[in-house]
Length: 262
Image (cartoon, rainbow, N blue to C red; front, side, top):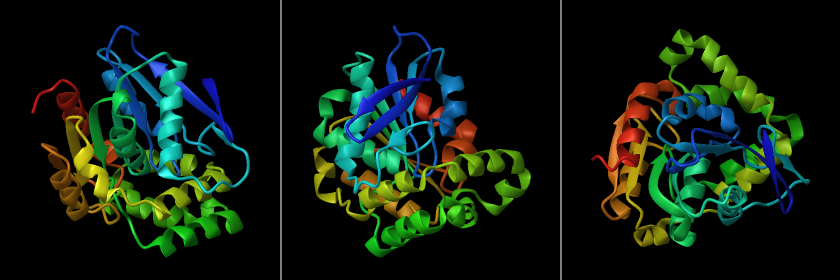
């Protein structure tokens, strides 16, 4: 995989599809990596130039010590990937913290954003103490201490029983995450409140939520969609990682949004 150097670390990225297709940037969840998007990259590579990367301290990306990251830093990292590839404008699809970075980019780096997909995410996700506690636990005991509870939030019980191998794959990605990278990213969620800026988003926006997502709930998704002009909301039968648990429906909604089909 290729690497881009940013201040405070380096970012791994991977591309699939032809360069003459519309560019699509995929941004993953906290504690995951670009491998979270395997199914979407395969599904869309014929029609889009798919770019995915791992956040600092996630996957094969590095982080130079603990950093109190903010959402702007994460969005700028994403823009750095596009800059390295000479891409001026792309569709953005982010899930969870990836969606938080994408919605920030749509507000503050709008020239880079064409169509926007915000999946299983929120503009504000209190309490701050929760993220501080997760950051502290990760640094003290490693992210493995958070793995069981995280998998229970990310997937429904039915999916965990039915697709144990896929859950094990995602768990392996999670437990391989650098605790420092995980804790640094927790700071960005802890301090984030994007609610006042959502009305400034002009990119055509699709909000996706999981009907059984206990973290970024359907109610939060509805609030997000209502605050962004002309945004559409799609609910999928899934918990947090709807791109995996409801793969076919997620892919169909994503393709329709990127193609301009409502």
